[in-house]
Each structure stands twice: as C-alpha cells, then as structure tokens.
Image (tube, rainbow, N blue to C red; front, top):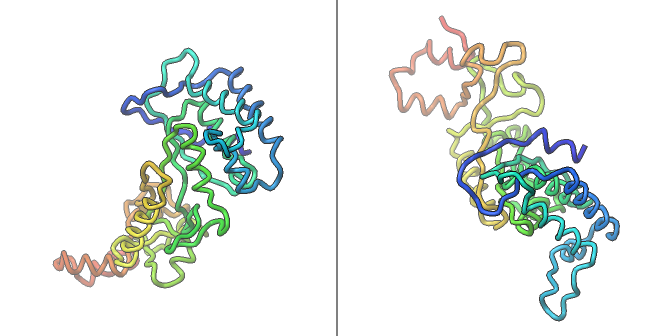
Length: 291
C-alpha cells in the first residue's frame, strides 16, 4: 500500500512558473527508477542507521569523504533524468499532500514516496507535520512526538532538498488529539446542537477553540517551532474549520452543524455583542434549541 497512497492524495496547483520542473514521465523511465532504487536499497543493512542516511547524501567532494557507492550514484543519475522530464510541457506547480509513516524513515520508504511523486510531475510536497495533537519531528516542547525517537520530518526534508523539491509543513491547526482536550487546558468546542466532535463524528475527532487564549498561544508557539526547524519552505494551515455535522444528518443540512462554540467564545460574544446576551440566545448556544 505504500505505493498506492500517493495517487489518491495528489492535488493540483497551478500558479507561478518554476524552472526545470518535470512533467509526468513515461513508464519505461519510472521502471528504471524503481529498479535503481531497489538495487540501492539491496546494498543497505536493516535497520537503516544514521550513518547509512548520511551516506545517502555524501558528495565525495572532500578528500576524507568516501565517494558515493555505485548504486547510489546510479540511482541519483536516474532521479535527475526523471526531473528533466520527457517530451511533455512541464507543470508550473503540482502539489502532493502526504501523511508520513515510520517505515518512511526506518526502511527508507521515503525514497519510494519521492520517486512516485517525481514521476507524477510533483514539484512540492505538503508533509502532514502536526495532526491529532502529535508532531512528526522530535524535540517539541509543545506537543508529543508521533514517533519519540524517529525524526520523520527531517528525513523528508533532507530527501526533498537533495532532489530540489519544495517541502511544506501541513498543520492541522485546530484539530488536536482527544488527550489534549481531555487534559483540561485545551478548550474543546460544541456545534450548534450541543454536540462535541466525538459525538458528531466519532472517536478521534477533537477540535479546540481559537477563542481560548491558551489555544492561540500554543498554536503561535507551534508555528514558531516548526519555522525554527529549518526543514520547510513554508507552512500550510489546515483544519481551521469545524466539520461537526452529525453522521445522522446530511452534511450541510443545517449551518449549526459547523458552528464551534466554547465557554470562551460565548464570553467573547457577550463582551462584543451584549445585545445578543439574552436568556433565549444563551439557551440556543447551549443546545441548539429555540423558545
């Protein structure tokens, strides 16, 4: 399934022209790339060590550095052929949204992901870096790591830089893990019917309120932290909406399905729109009913 997930998540972007970007390559070239990658991987021990990773990017430019192995040199040569494209006009921009897995780093499957991306003409990758309250890098002071001893974001960053691809951090801005909401400080939200995300969408859905000062402070800190890593060319903010429509109701049947209320947002409403602070309106915000 590693090779299957990429076409399903590919989205197109057409914007500024970027030089030297490849259109989708022909099957023979894609096959050559697969063969070159597998020949290189066959030379590596398992599990992949940090030294093996470093050897991947060794240039042999200094006299004390051993030259890259013939297998990795051949693999990189085929990658350059793919990047040059074959016949078709190149895409201006083509983006791919990717959810990383531990095997991307442990088994060097990131190479397969990048190969598939480039043969599809992808020019930039949006790496899911923060989702469900977890980050895809190590050393965060704000959120737990998805893999505490595995810096998958750095693995992607090194490979993207090696190939000349753009890499962006894809952030689920307000969709945090249930444990974050349950901790008490991350204020959750209810829809206009009084349903929490877990009630409306099921286990695993948890949204926090941007009207909470604690939430805003941590989101700002997260963006600063990701920017400070030096891995990414930018940050893509997503999941700022509240898709809280209950499965028992058709999506979009009622706008209250998509309202996100919390104690702090109601307090802000009372402060900024006191004329609306009536018993009837407070009852409506509490459970979606009207007198």
